[in-house]
Amino acid sequence: MFRFLLVRIASAIPVLIILSIVTFAIIQAPPGDYSDYIRSQLINQGGASFEAADAQAKAYAVTHGLDQPIPLQYVNWIWGIVSRGDFGQSFFYNRPVADVVGERLPRTLLLALTCHILASILGISLGIIAATRQYSWADQLISVISFLGLTVPRFLMALIIVYIMVFHFNVSEINSFFSAKYGGAPWSWGKFVNLVEHVWPVVAIATFGGLAYNMRVMRGNLLDTLNAQYVETARAKGLPESAVIIKHAVPNALHPLVMYQGVVLPYMLTGEIETAIIFALPTVGPAIVSSMYVGDVYVTATFMLVLSATLIVGNIIADLLLVALDPRIRTGV
Image (tube, rainbow, N blue to C red):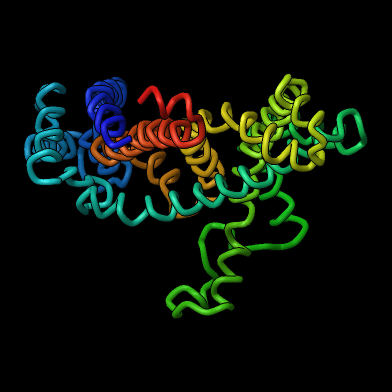
């Protein structure tokens, strides 16, 4: 198992390097950078002529290395990460990028993991119910829920919920985690309830898509597994139907879902990001949008690098779960 883990980590390093190169190149592809944003801001504010604004923008670009070739900017950025753990300086936030990421990423990961746990538990459970009650009203209802979860865009669901909350329930605090009175207060049950009141739309929307996929895959796999010969043999031995399903059918039907765990964390992250942008929550989503808008390249690149790393980590975790779940894979290792 340990050797298997080392091999997977070693193979992930080149992938991460390639992803960082591609990401940095794509971010730099559009014309302009943060110095152009400074120039436009100075001109729009009316405080400087075009010549003065252009001179200040060029001076800023030289000071922060934005005038250098893109490959050299990438090498300097990567070298800072490898040698000093320095992800660069955020131009827009005027803070180290590590501080910006460290402030927002834990919130995003916590929300994404919460959504993942809920989607896995509910989706697998409902998939088992649908498969064991095929063509019943419960199966039909679960199929409709699965269809809606896989087809309705998450940002559309977020817009609908925002509209209902604002115009029908007069909710005014939708762009923060806490109400004003709980912002700097110590943790308490009241503060936790207030947090849930603010984040439940994000959790519900991001969970819905993963739950729908888990239900659909679990139902299909379990239906195939229930018709397998070893399941029929277990029934012929007189085992209760519940034991046949839980002990024999479900573990083998879980294999595709375990493999899906390799991409589920990035999927949940993107779901949280999309929804958080609509609700303007201080998480990764709005930070990525604002940094891309103003050309804060190191913030955008670092966030993309972290999201790429979660995809790699998710695949490694999925491989380890498969090794633990399937004796044939464990024997091969």
